[in-house]
Length: 488
Image (spheres, rainbow, N blue to C red):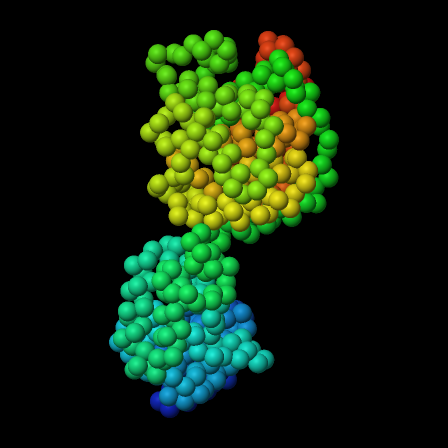
């Protein structure tokens, strides 16, 4: 008995041939029952943990020949109530710790279904889309299908990730198998939905993402929860009034210089501050770095314009015009980066993928709709800065234009502008990453509020005096754990 026991897997099914041995093992405390004919020799962990870890081998033993189908074929995991759906010749339900196997009457494997776990089949993608358009009532448990809304969402995701070709292929494959499954009605619905998404059919769609595709302005739904988290935090923010003391020249032009200088440093364009002053105020372009010099000049022409920095958008069309016009002036020294034009290729920073090129306008529109719900200049400024940075609509210059859009909100609202001193770069970048990756806006708001307070304490009436104050505060130092920005 010992040899047989040790050779058994962690979870196993009792058969006629092994039932006597299994009974002895249970009496000896060497095994315990998990469900109908299902046992384990793991006597330490909870039954729920054992079943969860061995889920698919268990299903393969208990439901041989079944087709993993309906919503489970989409999700490849139990539903929130623990249900796992399969298709078979007759209805059947097997209750296990934390899991319910629910076999519904359905067709066996057809062309395209894949062998799975040795004894099972996994419904093909077209079959899964068709089956999930079947009517299904939730009753006391989760519905067996994701329904029309869930199918729409997945079609929109497929279109966003893989393009028109993927939807056309799905439609063609679904057309072939629908008669064998008796799902011709569901195929007509699927065909109409695909046609609406591709713009070739006029069919009412239900999900916002799908409707946006049909209207020709799709957006990235993954960004909306991040925008919403920031919006909620900003609406509840107790804003500190920091009136702008640089509203008139020369203070306006002096603070604009440092705004442009530090904004370029963040992006890796590093000049000694005295040389940057000569570039901006004396038009002295170093022959070995003309493009970098024009980056600083271009940024200054935007953030140092009294007229432009008092303009804020009244509607989305004006927002796009301001964004593109400012980008055009900021990047005029780099014509290869397509100034004023949205990106023609997708972009990323490290492992972070920004919004896809075809989703830029739609995603900006969704974010702008949230921006309009904010009243305070600082709240609007932080939201619009993050919106532009997160979408990354241009080939280059996205960080600089995002900060320019931010400061236009502040200047036009009579509040102190924000720039990020060199020594404070890591705190700034880290706060953006935390918001993007964890939907946590607290660090971002805290970092930007601190930076605004810092700028508000500097006297920019005299350029050289402002430089000395910034230097005393460590503003020009490279980021390091041992050096911090000192509040004046």
